[in-house]
Length: 160
Image 1: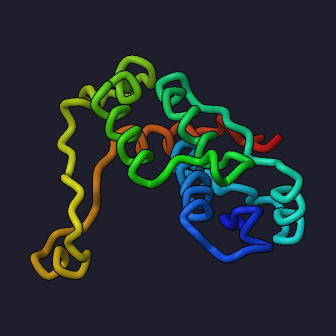
Image 2: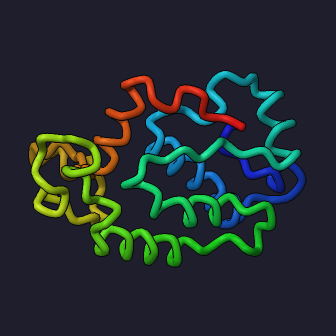
């Protein structure tokens, strides 16, 4: 229920609902918390129907993701980006590097994010990678730092 687009309560599922659901997952990754975690399912339904969204309180190095996040949960489904547009924008943000310049802003002793190895995303099934002995994980430094920051007590009052 947490990830259900408000319009999906009254009409068939489509890509715009998937984009809304993706936005909540993106919020959770960036904040290191579960959206609407303290609310009952019924309260979530009422809040989302009435236009409420989780409060966005991103660390400085993650703020570049905020416009995309908010576009994906736009109240009007027709104004949400398509998944190819989301992928393109995420790629642009990752290439830009400012959103991943974590060493300075986070105080991390890890190397600069752009020097961290990244696994190329492929359509290969996870089961096939496990058969080869791969763990099937993708390392994204921004996510690790965001989750670490959230676990330190920052952002505990995450909802409007």
